[in-house]
Length: 68
Image (cartoon, rainbow, N blue to C red; front, side, top):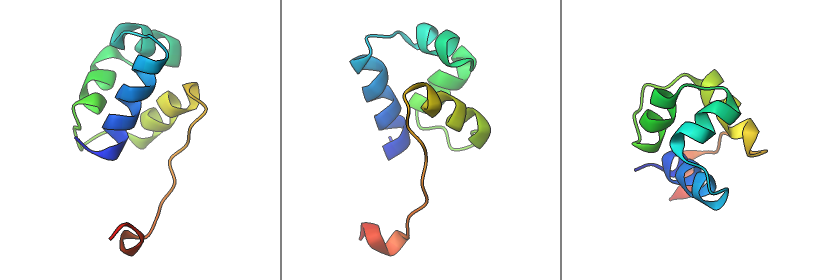
């Protein structure tokens, strides 16, 4: 799992939401939530941002060298 999928799953559990509840509340499809939590790499960024916005989170770009 990647950082994004781990973070979304952690936040969903903190909010005590099922995947279906998160999809309804954030306005993205259930399949999208499942794919995101499973670490699928071919996701649409607009939908990722829409889901993260529900948690008041946003994606930011960082240098790869910062993570090494």
